[in-house]
Amino acid sequence: MASEKPPPPTDDWAHYRALSLHKGGFGDERVEIWPKLLHARPTAGNFLEASTEMTPHPDERQIRLDTERSFVLYPVDSPTDKERLQTELHELLVQIFRKRPRLNYFQGYHDIITVLLLTLPPELQLSCAEHMSLQRVRDSMGSTLEPVLGLLRVMRNLVRIADPEYAELLERTSPLPYYALPNLLTLFSHDFPTLPLIQHAFDYLLCRPPIFVVYLATAIILSRKNDVERLEEEGEEGMLHSLLSALPDLVDDESDVRAEEEVVAKEESSPIPVDEEADTETETKSEDEYVPSVADHSEASELPADDPPTYFEPSSEHEEADDPSPTPPPPPPRRKPKPKPQILTALLVAADALHESYPSTYPALHLSSIMGPQSVVYTWSPHTKDMPSADEAERMVQRPDLIVYPEPPPPEPEKKPAPRRTQARSVTNTGLLVGAGLVLGVAIAVSVYGARHNSDPARELRKVGQWVGGFVAGVTEKIVH
Image (cartoon, rainbow, N blue to C red; front, side, top):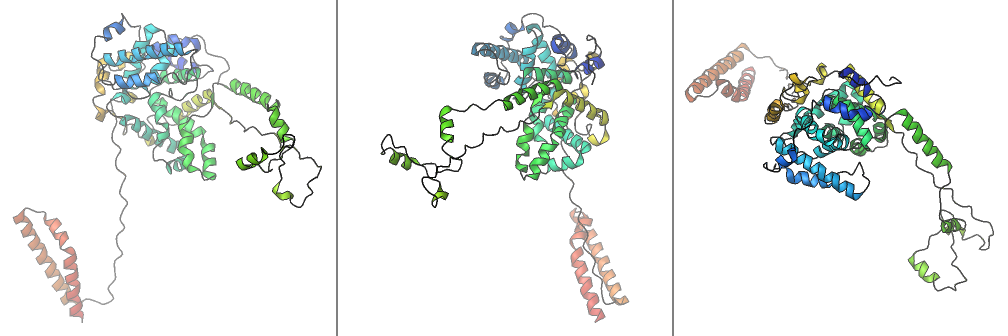
């Protein structure tokens, strides 16, 4: 990774991709770069007023519920600011779905639009949100979420290719990586802990094809291999889904790790604040001393005020009551070591390396047999002229069969043929002739029956096969004897 950022941004997609791998990503320049990457232009006129006269979208009730729960991960200065942002988010979402009524809302979509709302000026929000919806997350805006399950199948294949043993361990508890579903569905906007981190992740994703969300999700899962193996060693496989559903602690760059380490070292070197009364108590009791029950306290309350209750250790029955030896205070509690955070820029580089080794055309990925020709995986392009128009893209959600193909059923296990039994006795020519004649007669009869009754002669012949075999065996056995 280069130590210095590239020169000021141009319209070169390779430049944007290089810039997204540096600390902070696009930084303040993303306000200019994101609209270019989304092929968006400022909205002409006041569409908010026009949308009030449009037919409400069927999903507006769910939109209202989700906006009322929004702005939790990215806290604002005051409740007033939060209410204002929730109102702005709701209005923006309503505008999108009234303008594009064929699109369907999914829970978590508001998290994606929240990032745009907090990053871009008002005149760019609607256009960028519309293009984000139609050209990048359209697959999830149909009547079902089957396309996202298709991406999970692609991700499963990628993990199998990158680390077969690790993939086998993961699939013992989950046949598909369902723990990654929220990340694929919301482009990580639902779980990233801070706005600067998710903005940097958007910098990375928006200057790459839509399939890169699978590569980034896979890079994160591969980075947690040690944690997963530790749980398996401890017999806690049931905790794998919980572990992998949550993102690791993230920082943007190595310098942030060093800053956190300095803070942790400073905290560990400082004494732990303890209440004065607790200090006095620890000077007279050890960790394993008897702790009085409620009844003990009631008895103690009857003692004179100047005669405090005495506590006895169970093991001190044979010791003298007036033993003057002081009890040492318990050791100070140890702070639980904080896990080392993951570096976002390193994960982004790892995702690029995965794509370089196993691109979307890699045969074992089976992308073309999972995602259909109208998926954003295939319709997106860095050039506007090569993408469907907004109206065409909106209509594509009505053809889910062309977006994702159903997963074929698993192959049935092969049935091993039963071992043949060898006859210990020889069969005479007479027995063979009888048997052959009987089989031929049955075959002719079945053929005639099938012709008359419009049935399959081969099927009828199979029905009597066992009976013929048994009869022939009986005849030949009698002749031999």
